Amino acid sequence: MGLMGRTPPHPDVSQFDLQQVLEALVDPVRRSIVTQLDASGEDLACGTFDIAVSKSTATHHFKVLREAGLIRQYYVGTSRMNALRRAEMDEAFPGLLDALTRPRVSLPA
Amino acid sequence: MGLMGRTPPHPDVSQFDLQQVLEALVDPVRRSIVTQLDASGEDLACGTFDIAVSKSTATHHFKVLREAGLIRQYYVGTSRMNALRRAEMDEAFPGLLDALTRPRVSLPA
DNA sequence: ACAGAAGTACGATCGTCGTCAAACTTCGAT
DNA sequence: ATCGAAGTTTGACGACGATCGTACTTCTGT
Image (cartoon, rainbow over all chains, first blue to last red; front, top):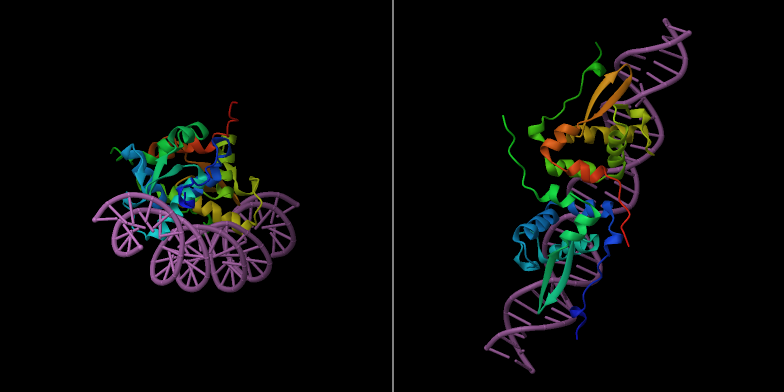
């Protein structure tokens, strides 16, 4: 019954704020996290992401993403799982995640 | 034939960079400029925007937007006109400007 | 030619943010 | 019960960026 077992606070869709979401997504590391989540299609533990920062920095990034509403976090054992809140983001800001997770297409000549 | 008359450098669509575009759009003042341009549907002089910053700061913001490819700038007399590069942005990052300029819809109960 | 309007260029300041290391907590497995 | 794996917390540091005032440039109108 440790404190760690308690799920951290998550904002409701009605509280999503565009400014906050953009500030979360402007960082390349955080955008990479979102992209990896979107591509995998499943929930991922913090440690499984391919990001080149220390653990404490990673914790910080996940917190920013969670507080912006982009991910939902819950514990499984000692692992913290991360789920992309796709549907809710799409409801709040239609097309935004689509535009940001779509890989850049090479332009025709 | 003053130097001021020469148009400043504008990136080509093929050089648009998502990171740079996001860094440009994450600032509320700059996003407001883009929104006002999009809403008005016509080119606007720097001085006609409704932004609460000094002239020198405004110059800085327009420069960031131009270098990211979001606006095209040209002189008309002493006024610097700003045009939203809508089509080119849509080509490079489909749906992005749509998602950011669409006013937030109130959520149903 | 001169004054004013519209921006630009240049420093300087100041706050915020991404980063890390170190110490700590929690949980699972042995 | 102990150890290691997985994250968290805290504090510090460094870089970057938004802001401003001042001085400067360019063009327009008179």
